[in-house]
Picture: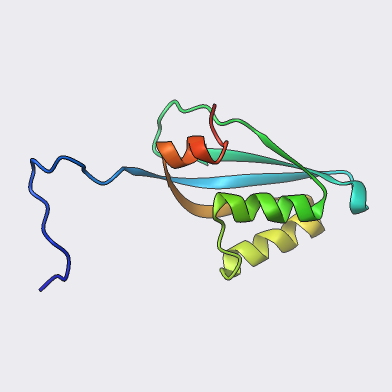
Length: 109
C-alpha cells in the first residue's frame, strides 16, 4: 500500500516531466587560470538547445555544479571531477531536470 495519494487522470497539476541527460565539462588551460565550459545534453531527442556555462577556476566550477544540483557524494561525480583534472574533460551522467529547472539553472536560454 502506497503512502502517497493516488493521482487521477484529471488532476490539475501533473508532475513535471524530467529529461534524462548528462553534463559535459571541458577544461581549457591549467592551474589556477583554468577555464571550464559546461554543456548540458538531453538524451530524449528533444530539440532543446543548451547554453554553455563558463566557470573561471576550480572553485567557481564547484559552486556552479552545486547550484545545478550535482550530488558530490556520488562516486560517478567524484570520478568525473578526477577525470577533468587528469584528462581535461568528463561527463557527469544521470542528471534528471525538468525544462523549468533547466531554465532556472541557466542551462537553456
